Image 1 (tube, one colour):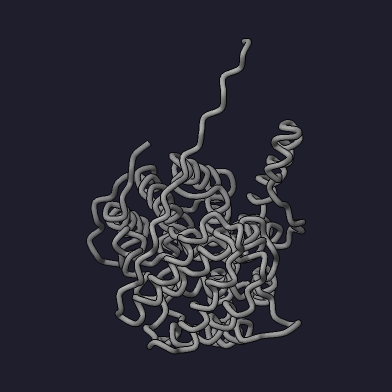
Image 2 (cartoon, rainbow, N blue to C red; image 1 turned 135 degrees about the vertical axis):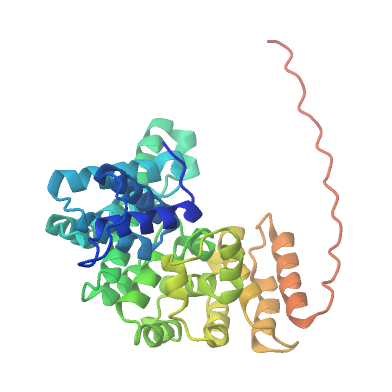
Length: 381
């Protein structure tokens, strides 16, 4: 399998498109390469589009395959080969490979592919949680079986989210309400039983958030802020955490870090970031502070607070005494007393406050570990 870089894929794709499109009447025809070679260029470009989530490149590939006259099995074979190369070495997730392959087929004129995407997006996905640690100690076989169920559920959930994103990019109507509803569902990998991993995992944006932005570019931000500002019974803590994390991951200061890793260009993350208002970070201050105040007691742990606190680093600097910094200071007393990483979380909060105010964080007291006497050897073996 050839390793194709972004720098190599774009010229190859443009060359393929040039040769497929017929020259104007009377113009000198360019020297053509074989149709097989052109399709090979398109296949490599589709692999690159999947790995980098480059939607513009995918659209160009679909146009090229359509212009080449590929249909049915011949078209599907090209896409399957691109999917294989994209999945090789775990360069992108299975859900992304499958849904982007179907999107290319749909753009190239395959109606069955569009129906398959719709089916993935409509799938009824019951929540699943990973097996408890206690179960592993009690019954390893049962725990392993439960783990397989959880992994299958998580994979189906990922395909569901990516399918909604692809449908939004394909201009399918009615995607935004379904994506917003999905963001409120509790998921085992999320904050305290809800929310998501920081910044959508750090290497990519949040598929459901981006689905909302692409489905309704003009109204999306107002709806997202409306969900963030909800309080009381109507508020979904899980959806609010997920929206905050997804938006903060798309802010310019974080996008610059992603660009250094070669994840920009026409990626869906970059395109989604352009749909955010310039003062998005300012508008997040109030709902983020409210979220910290309403954080449930069972979330005052390392697993709960760590990803939530990281969001504060990306917000606009605040002065001492501001509502955000006072709220952060108040979290110290709420951290669970039996949390083994309490000192670390306190230090993290002090560091955030110091970054905002420009003052040095207070030194943490050194607590040496207590020597533990080794167990006595048994008298008999």
